[in-house]
Image (cartoon, rainbow, N blue to C red):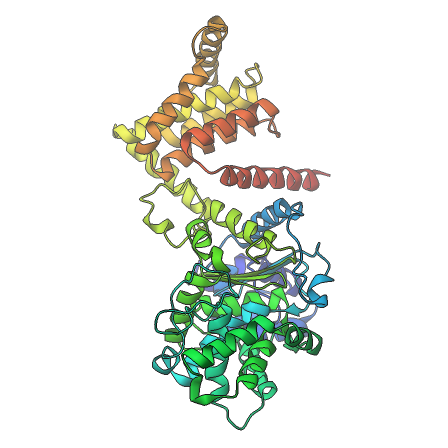
Length: 577
């Protein structure tokens, strides 16, 4: 079968397909119908309507955009298992939705009166795969999310040397509105108010003949390019006027900058402040911000338009500043726990960049004491607890807690790991044999979780052993082994440790010698047995969690596996109804 036939087979049945089926497969890959790279294909599909499509017609249809069609249909985009990934994101989103802690910013009415229960998450990968959940179409002022991009604008227009004469790149460790300056009288960085005001001065000084509002439009144009024109970038006059009326501390900062360091090109102080406040009053949606973040993740090239918006050098400096100071005076803790460049705003937005993979944005107005969105930060923490997104996860030496790497197909990886282990066991490898023995013990203890030794569980154990050892043991032999272990556990009564307690202790001792693949195979085997009868009983769930903890596997990762199993069960029931 040549490549075109294989591509056609991925969307066809009995030698034909249709536009609806092709559209569905493209959607499953994460590619939207408005993607600029597939416009010829999309238009031709529309012309065909509901007519059947054979191999020859299909080849002519996709020919002009064949490489992109192939990447989408053959799961070769940056996140190949897109549907599973979206379901995992939905799980995290639902986990966070019940958190009602924190409170809206209240220093101006428009922020105080915003609906505190709004909650949205939007994602865009560097390949243009997009998803959005919840309140992602609500326009809100971007506030401090504007700061790193105003800095990027200054770098692009004025250069790094001139820009850094007036603003530093050091984390301050101080509240964002503090009046502190570095010893050389520069603001610490562009993400604190002093640095953002000075950055606005740098930009304003380069446009002596333009008003602050006209310059703001230039920066709004930058934002529009960053988000690929996904929506119209708005400006809130109400926010701007309220910000100006309450800007007493910012005026104090501006006068301090003028008196200590001096302003760039002696720019008018009021023009500088108006530009700063106007940038905070720009309005966008979470969906738009996610594409802007993806543009930064993609080195300055917008994934949904292909346009280079910023140079890679400017993006590197911008992300470095976001990493060091983007989350106000909690930036250090955020870097420690999340490890990603991010910027928050007091209207409730958090814009986050996963370099070379994706950008995402969250929106929820309730803030923590640092001024960061409670739900937004919680989402980031749960995300990196489940996926290898932390900047230093690649230094883990194979011990990430079995976090997922969405860049790789989980199904293909698991099959490869099982094949490698089976091969190694057949040659007597000590490590592989240890994994096999621990796996078998865990499966048996899950079988005994509810006190019964069920035929479906024995069959699953036998099948799993066959994958690992290359031969399928007799289920009755497994039943005898399980029964002996059960008898030993019952005989202990309240004296000593049960076999399961001994197993948990052994796993705790052995886990430093087990890499992620070995630990995941052990838990995967136990998980299969727990799911053998179509549901996970309460006792099985408790034992799975105990095994995961002993193996050092994140609870969040186990929850993702449980969620995937529940989706499979629901899908099977729907197919059978």
